[in-house]
Each structure stands twice: as C-alpha cells, then as structure tokens.
Length: 244
Image (tube, rainbow, N blue to C red; front, side):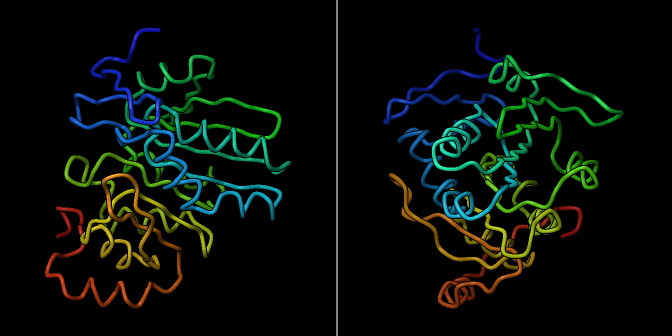
C-alpha cells in the first residue's frame, strides 16, 4: 500500500520502521528503534503488564496514533499475558495516516465526531480524528476514565499545543487518580507543565541517545529531588499562548 501523503518511510536501528512527517519535520519514533522505544517508554513506563495482570480491564489513551505502533505493541503484549479487556483510544490529526495504518478499520461519524474503530475478542481500538484540543472536549461524555496515557505527540518545539499546562490538565480530567502518563520528553518546561497541572512527576528511563524521559501520575506527589532540580531552572512551564 502506498505511503500516506507527506510522509516517507524510515528504517530504525532495531529493524522496525517508522514514518517521517513533512508537516512536522520529525519522525514518529526514535530512529534508534521504533519498537523498542515504544516498549520502554509506554508499556514499561505505564506499567501495562502490572495493570493487566491484576485487573479485568485497562483503558489506555494515546496522544498521537502515528504508525499505530503503540497500539500494535500493546495489543500483542496484552494477548500474550492476560484475559483482561484492552480499551485503547488514540488521538490523531491526520486521517490519511490512519487509513494507511488501519486499512481494515471502520470509519464512523456522528455530528462533529469522526473516528475509526476495530473490535477484537478482548480489545477495542478507537482512533479519534482531528485536532486533539478540539476533539477531546467533544468526547468527554463518551469516554471512560483512563488508567494510562501514552503522551506521544510530536515534540514540544514542533507541536507545542499538546504539551502545555492546560493540555495536561485536560488529560487529568480524563484520568483515574493514580493514572500513569509516560513520554519520551525530559524537557524542563514539560515537567513543570505536568506538575502545574496536577500530575506527580518523576524521571523516566533513558533510551538510546536520550539520557532521560518523564513519567507522571495523576493526583500523586512529585519526586522531591526532581522538584528541587526544576526549581533551579528559570524555564517556565509551557502554557497556551492565548492564556500566557
């Protein structure tokens, strides 16, 4: 199948592929290994195995569907270890990307809400199409509270509206207390934004050339040593421009 418009295929160092977006001028995953990055930052970062082995259902929200690798790795993992039901909801701006990644998914539309869906024996995948800052409020009453969030948007430099204090507060409204959020970013401004929005923030694992990443839990205390480090930096939390 042809690649989606404005994207080119990139081979990563673990043998898996990703896409480079011309619109954001970034790849969807680390070129050091797309699959391995997904496992480290999201499955491990959100303690997916721990939750699925102890509970009958897990609700996961992914910010940035991309090539679908977050869903693929999570679904494959869940099938191997548990009989729990996996409810996976992803947010994606580019409908062409979803059509390419999910050729068998069914397209649905209800008023302003547009999504693609696939149903499996112990899982459901729903990909919500559009600008996430607009679509998320439209979906509030239609979504369960989430146990985990994969914050996998393009970088704050390229896509800042999905990394602000206001955005993380919005995600908090969709989360159970104690819900885990994981991201590859270790930016000071992002960590401060998460903390300001009510997330407990702490350092995450290194991956490849990145020496750190970020983990968070909703309505939990932040790592005290990390807060001391953040206080030393004059960089402010990233906020919406119109509210700054």
